Image (cartoon, rainbow, N blue to C red):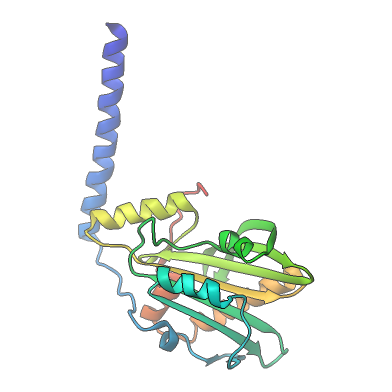
Length: 236
């Protein structure tokens, strides 16, 4: 009898807790005005020239036709470009993938899952932050190799108008948007360089992102870089 009472009390407390969370979220959603996010096509949203960077027509990427066909079936828009830094001659490969409906079937595919499907070996993976336009963006970095090819990769994900990292943050952000009656969209921003110098490569990738964000408007920035990072959760 005592066990039944304690279990019932615990269950009631749990439901009360989640009730407060949901109520607080609903109240907050009515107080906070939605952030304007650009719906511009990715091809026109990202300039072909900014700062020291200039796009290379028909620049090489890692995506082969079979993989591209699969990406086209999952995402509403994709963009793959290679830029050259006219000051030092180094190349950065940019890849964007946007989906208007972030259900489990069409959610963003992370590079650590996509690269091995193309034969790459993931040698390292870590979580860090890039200082971009005066704020820290949670970034996942990894190193992929295929034969003699060494590639350093950085990426982040934007769900709705917020940068998230990891499946738990993705799912929580979707739930918060759903409570506001919003079907969450998602964008994956990936930059990479073929290089054997880890520190120099990630520094160049951060500089590329910083130069890009300073060359576009605020609604465009929100689309690519989010309006804020989802720092409330630290679980990967």
